[in-house]
Image (cartoon, rainbow, N blue to C red):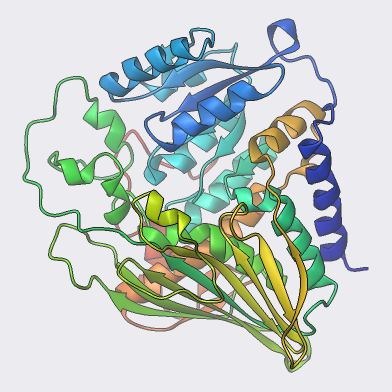
Length: 451
């Protein structure tokens, strides 16, 4: 059995143990044997972090950090309503990281902050759960890995599909040859999104610490579109929907094909239909080519669509209508010499389904979730880094595909990539984008050369 098969099977069994409520290995952490965790950025996804961590036994959300004081105060009220202990509160993450009573930090800030908080957190002796995408550019990922290694910290990437039972089972089936010799994975990010419109520059509202929110990025005039959530669609702060939603499916596609860095990347698209402030494309087609030993080749295709679109392989459900999102189709398709396998983003509605042989007879299927937060806490206690479902190193590889595709789109050309050096061959402009996303760093929020 290959190392990849062993890795997938081990995590499948570990995920089953988490789902059954198996006890985690004990380690003395903080008062009363609790893991004391702080959550950075609690408006949207970070509020999910608070609630999910708070459900786990012997885990305390001991602190929250938020630069919008109205959000901070609202979350304190929400935690009180849930009967949770009142946490410490911070506006400046540097003060949070100086708190020696905190064991781990969970990061749900804008992407531009992910790497710096991770690196600083490792230096401060904290374990880290960092939301996807872990980095704003390729170089940040390398520095994050260096920090985690140097300070021997647990760092889990927020690609939670790696903890879903059905997803882990699908990976095992693919690696064992369920649909034959794999040659292509197709990732779908068909997510209906309305226009963000135009918003004017304005004075920063009271209670918003905009300098801290901006962090490493250039300090632009405040507009509502550059702030809550819509920051995803500006190159200074985000990576478009390829890095926002698509990173989940790129990670899944790469995992299923059992490949790492590509040899060639091309992407084209644009911002169609809407006239608004968005900089990143709302329609994008990407291709990643892998040249393998023995002359074999595999490919990943990936599409982002924000407008009206069809479904593929019945990925996507009418449930999305009830959420006001339209018929989203988010998932992956895998093609082999003896069939295909489809994985949807929502296990409750899709899970995975397979179709075997030239007759496309229905094959194995499964619908089961998992707990990515619990798997992180298990490793925080055990210190067994090999048990991480989504280790930082894997997150970095998947995020590099995002960064390469965005660079190809922005430069308008195909990129030839060296997987050994992790550099684009003969293209200084592309490597500059991989190094700092083309925007540099604003002091004092600078990623250090030496961690």
